[in-house]
Length: 439
Image (cartoon, rainbow, N blue to C red; front, side):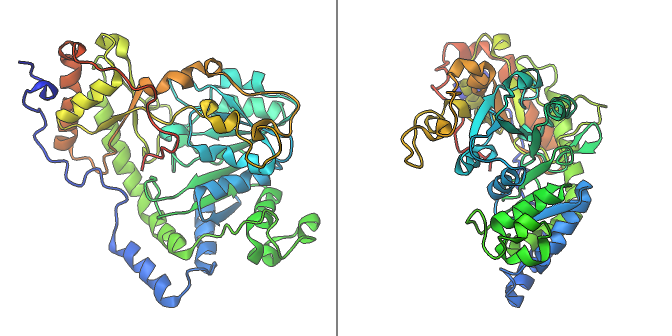
């Protein structure tokens, strides 16, 4: 009989993980902040939100921040802020949550997808320049699974091509690229701060920028109640009083009150998580078939709070064993993991044949003359990445006995992979999900 628990053996895990994967970490100050807002009946005011915006902008070293009700809204406002409109293109990596790009269709713009770098899992700079066309207005740079994208190369290309850069930092709160915080490189950035995110405030989003016009356009788009105090540009002032986008995007003050508490405690939590996850990844180094998805040590680049922690899976080193069966075997040993990641957006029907606004042709190409719809093979890394990664739990503290215990489950399965080959049922046709947000 095999030693693997998946095949009837005894599982190797000795410790109950307890609360080590729980997130966010809730304290009395968070609870009291909610009670205060409730008792003062300030849920829909914006005095606390203004304070949160100020602190968030200071954290990122930028001039402006604008609190939204979701991360999706913050990115929508960023698109409008940089001037994305009818007939324009937004370039986006195929592997990301849909909110990195789908809002562009409501602005009568289109989305062009670019493949990802197989190591970072972020947009591949070597493919980006050739995809920029005269229609390209902006590039959406997603710091996917907490890994900062190659901002040096991306910014050089986009500045030379005079294309705006929006950073989607929803996975990477507090992450650094060569010592500089993500979100501070591009023309604008958007953050989700929903429950599962590293910087978690329940539900909400934040836009940041150094450009006054981008900030004011975002205010005009979905913050009608702040027009009077925030709009100084003449063409925007002429439309004061109504939200230009027809949206009501303000942040509720339960969220902003939680955000102010999180601002104080998140740096310490982020360091604890970073230490714990790097310790875990150190234990995985050298195990056949596994390669931690993390920045090079000493590079000044970090993953912040390690949202959606991934491990590269190399089936060739394990006899072709599917990632699905590998993860099932690890879970049988007591380990925490799940195969796949976000499914490639360039393959979804919404970006191919759906007429959302009844314009007589697929919405994605309704306002451009050229058919830019990709085939699956146009983004080959994205098309297959679900079979080559798996997610793992995010340790909220550096309890070495539990972390070692978890690492042992992966080591045991990898070292006994041959026993699984005859029982491997393979991967399903698709791994991951369209709506996967790694909550």
